[in-house]
Every structure is written in C-alpha cells, then in structure tokens.
Length: 74
Image 1 (spheres, rainbow, N blue to C red):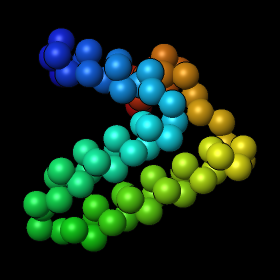
Image 2: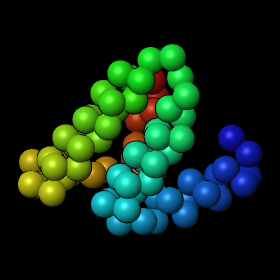
Image 3: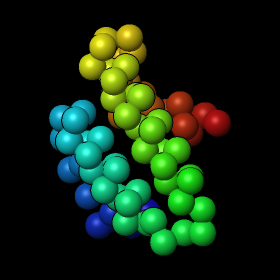
Image 4: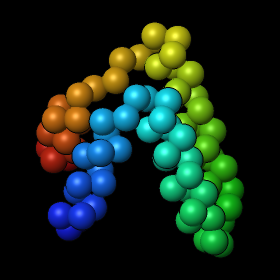
C-alpha cells in the first residue's frame, strides 16, 4: 500500500465497529462489477454475522497491532 492508502486505513480503523462494518459493505459494493456477485453477497452475510457476534459479545475484536502481527506471521 502507499502512504495515502495507509492514512485512509488508519482513519477507517479509528471508526467505531458499526461504522467500519458499514464502510466495508460500501467498499465491497463498489467492487460489485465482478463476474461473481454471489461472492459479494457471501461477504455481506459474513460481515453481518461477524457484526452480530461482536454486538452479542460472543467474540472480541482484536487490536489492529495484534491482527497485523498475526497476518504477518502467516
């Protein structure tokens, strides 16, 4: 990523979970010109399920630094 994208990502990560979820759906919708719209719908359902789990308290969000470290370790 470049500095501009990094800045936007940092701003987005500072949003409350509900707003980040809405932003994610909007970004996915912007890519909806792909050949397989079922993938977009699958992601939308996954996002909604994860959002519901966060609200219900059945899962906890990880801090970005921790998530980034996990991803780097893959």
